[in-house]
Amino acid sequence: MTTDIRLAFAHPEERSLASASTDPRDRISLRDHVVEVEIGAFQKERGQKQRVMFNVVVEVRPVTGPLNDDVDRILSYDRITEAIAAELAAERLNLLETLSERVAERILAEPQAMRAFVRIEKLDIGPYKLGVEIVRSRAEVGLKVVGHDGVEATVHPLVVHLTNDMISAPDLTARLDALMARKVPVILTVGLPDLARPVTGHRPTQRRVDLLAMEQNAWTLAARDPRCVVVATRTEIDWAIKRGQSVVWAPSKMVLDAVDGPKTADPVALALWLAETMAASGIVVHEDVALPAGSRVPVERF
Image 1: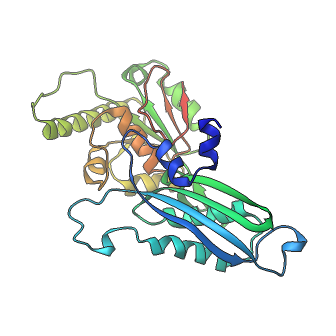
Image 2 (image 1 turned 30 degrees about the horizontal axis):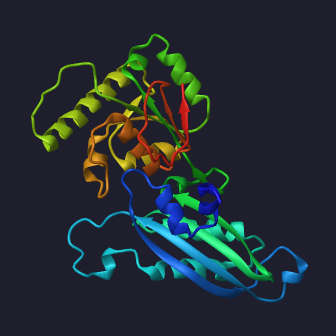
Image 3 (image 1 turned 90 degrees about the horizontal axis):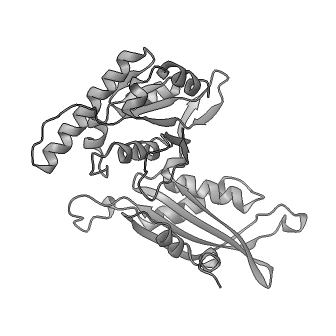
């Protein structure tokens, strides 16, 4: 059996390990949790309960500071079983796919949860198990927006990383026109400017210097097109996304305030982190830009 096939049937914990980035996260798991429930699209499945088994693995953000053996500082296992129970109680469902999506979404609403593997299997259909497994990350839980018709929808912005050549290019306006024509909010990110900057010889302070230099570059972009409004906080970004507007990201505040934020000042790594944080539909980079391993966001090159 090849590795891919073996992993397809392995426990979700193995799949989590196999697909982890170079900086893997902590995990908690629920194994072989069996519940009797009425579920199924076929007539013979209506009006009777059947056994359904759940296996769930949740990747969680590391706890900063001492744990002090305090349960309130971690994601409790009860949150997983409660998510399952809540979705089973909400309504009768036909599809395991629907149930797994809702369980994953409820788990990822927890602040510590970053990625969820949910496997659900029916045990009573025959002399075998029938099931579905999904993987969802925080990057796929978007911002909820209520439209003019009163209907709630999820909005996934597009993160676009511009090189210095693009910022200074004569066709910048045309490029922005093409991006805006997609009818989704665009978050523009930039790198370090092509200018000398202080060298501190001290990693933490150099990181701050580099972040501030990126912000100077963001303002340089803003001077080239009035649509490039510079923002620094998550609140400002959310406000713009809810209104379908596009912005340029000044990274210092969000990066330095983040509990589990990136420890680097690499502009591309920061753009990818922002894309995951903002549940972006994708990240667009120049064809020559190398992205760090472990991206959970679709990549497009231009």
